[in-house]
Length: 498
Ligand code: NAD
Image (cartoon, rainbow, N blue to C red; front, side, top):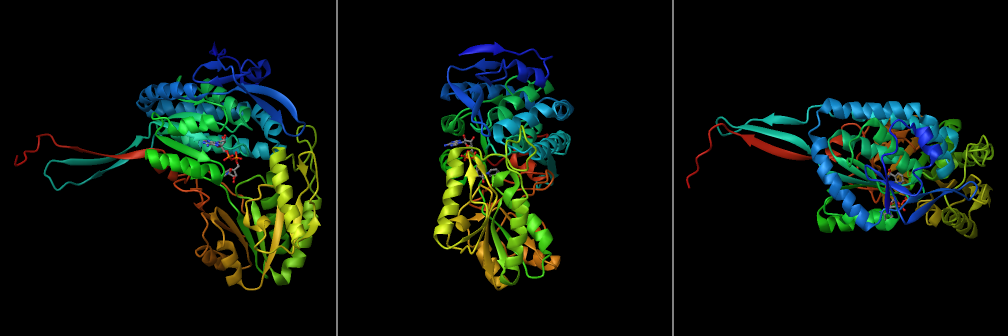
């Protein structure tokens, strides 16, 4: 292992990328090259774009130790200075937007509009976090003892490990990193192995240039072993994990044994209900957006369309027409709404679910075919609730339609899932939708909208196997990334009987 040390701080992010001096590196406050490398692939072409350095268990331990020391200084840095760093990060991100967008397109297969949206949301996220350090961080309580003052205040968790997925690599990393830093924590980021540059090394460079002190933010690319080393490291006091339910469960088990806080944002199998009186144009637009955006590779993807029998045929036709109008191709070289799936394993899983449904009596309204990693948007009718395509998280561009006759049946179908992330209801009576929402086991319910929603100022998160502890956004971030401490003070020491 050798050190690049500091790359020239005057180098812009665009120059930083072009020069590729970060190749084979990870970031510990200094740029270090690793003997073990992870290839960075472009799913649309199968081309290797670059490589990053893998942080092994020994590197993780050193990084966590360094972070523990650096965090103590960062937490006592005046709040306006911490806020200024985050504002500068937001400014730089906007200024250097094109570099981030291009990497998101090439490394993660994002359509340009998706990468642009994600970039904008990250700028908002950083600006919101910049307002956090100046807010009151406690309360004063009365005491039954004369002369005593009781203070309850927030203190940082210490070192927070953020472990992220690849589908929204910037946003799902920054939604934890930004508030955690704002509240005085140090952060160790392990990006997904499928987004090590977009959701990893680019963020390292951004926060380095914005002025985050050495050691307070570090980026440690790698596979599951790097993640596991972070989860069990004694210097890491909290895990903020976004990813699959299977991996979340494993992390929760380790954190349970270690009594370590973990915040889990996991998978989903999200329902979209269409009632007989719904506006079918609007409902099918929601259905298409909810199922096909980013090739369906979104935790909030509408994976279960639950449609009243009287409108199911018309809804399926409209959804099919919307699917057929979508262009699928290399988002870096073509103007398309849909890019590639992230890898062949994911494509084969999606195709397997579709094939299984067809073998068991479902009908293909459209799609169900692919070339390389480009999977056509797919609409399935005649689906039954027992089919895996309806019961499992799809994470691909597939819209299975199940019909219902009575709203009680629809609500029962929605709740017949271990997941509980997002639900959408299309109805002419929004108040009814609001009432039904109270009976739905889901962390988020949207009336007359689709399932994929995220606003940085609103607490976001799932129920059931979609996650626990995790509520990101707005006021929830204060609870998420701090601990509570009671401090009591008296001027004259209290005298006890013995
Ligand atoms: P994943 O669980 O395979 O990987 C997520 C991260 O965990 C990666 O960085 C990976 O390297 C790391 N990891 C893997 N094994 C680990 C281990 N044993 N210990 C520690 N870290 C480990 O998920 P993915 O394929 O990257 O993302 C897709 C999944 O994420 C889907 O299930 C999706 O629904 C979910 N997701 C949830 C949300 C949400 O907010 N609820 C958002 C996006 C994605």
